[in-house]
Amino acid sequence: MIVLHDKDVNIAAEMLKNSKIVAVPTETVYGLAANALDKNAVSKIFKAKGRPQDNPLIVHIANKSDMFPLISNFPNKANKLIDKFWPGPLTIILPKSDIIPSEVSAGLDTIAIRIPDNQITRELISLARVPLAAPSANRSGRPSPTRLEHVINDMEGRIDAVIDGGNCSIGIESTVISFVGDTPVLLRPGAITIGDIVSTIGDISVNDSVYNKIRGSEKPLSPGMKYKHYSPNAEVVIVNDFKDRYIDFVNLHVGEGDVYALCYEEDLKFIKINALSYGSIHLPDEQARKIFDSLRELDLLGAKIVYARPPLKDGIGLAVYNRLIRAAGFNIINL
Ligand code: TXA
Ligand code: MG
Image 1: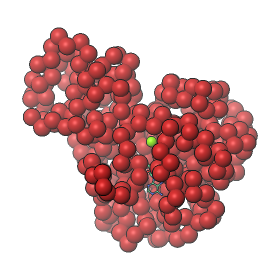
Image 2: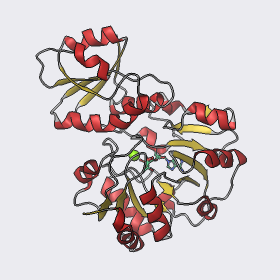
Image 3: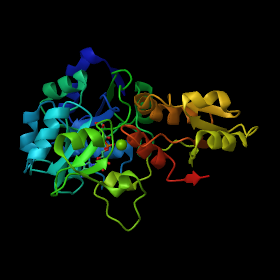
Image 4: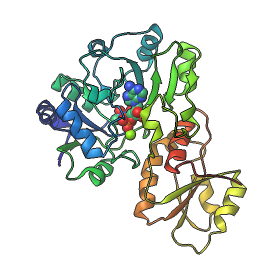
């Protein structure tokens, strides 16, 4: 894999036109991009990630007008929402048109679309003159990549290039909302919060998978939600309780070198075992920015068991919570 820089976007655009796959920076996480209209290139994404074939991809465009050839219906509420939040960490699901290959939509009759808020990647899309299908650029099941080295660690030898865009400013993937039924449905929480959405378009429903594990027999609205996700090699356990009880619990493990606490910055001074913070209790944006890097860092530190203090479920905190319960495989202790 070659590492490209912002001045090389034209090289990356040529590669994409020639069915190659290139990891690209976005404001949320790095994506692994291919020409969305090229089945052969899209199938390389699934192979490089080890992604299940039934998990559809998000299509990235540079301008709102690029969306119309890709969709077959455009509700007014979707229009209102994208006018407010694009470019940005918001993905909308709409009925798709015929030009989108079924490889991208994984056989569904809908398509996920967003305009990323990243100058390099928007310029790349404009130069390549095609929509880019791009899931997060991690190996399937691993934490999403928010730094260049995360992409290199997961994808070396498996993809053609990566564009270095520095660290991702948001750090968790986009909010996903479906406009396929009568009421909009939140499928994945992100930096565009439920409050942001409701104040723009009124009531929405929230898919059960945002808070809970999907039962084996259910067919989820968002196929990605049924897979084990975001996991480091270490076993992550969520310890759901007040600060003092969390701290007492983890301190019972003094002397167990491969047990780690994953906690707020403010907790560190009370914790007597190995510990890593994912940000200040007062800074939910920082928690979002650091959560995936922290999960990867725990592996580098050699953690085997991680007791995590979960974030509050307000605002962007809900998105961090949603990722962390999946990283833990829904292993939650209520003390
Ligand atoms: O921020 C992001 O969204 C990043 C960057 C690269 O843009 N991309 C990303 O892609 O997170 P991925 O593939 O890791 O997650 C896409 C999610 C999956 O849960 C997938 O199942 C869901 O969106 N999805 C995609 N197309 C869908 C569709 N037509 N209907 C329902 N869910 C869909
Ligand atoms: Mg992903």
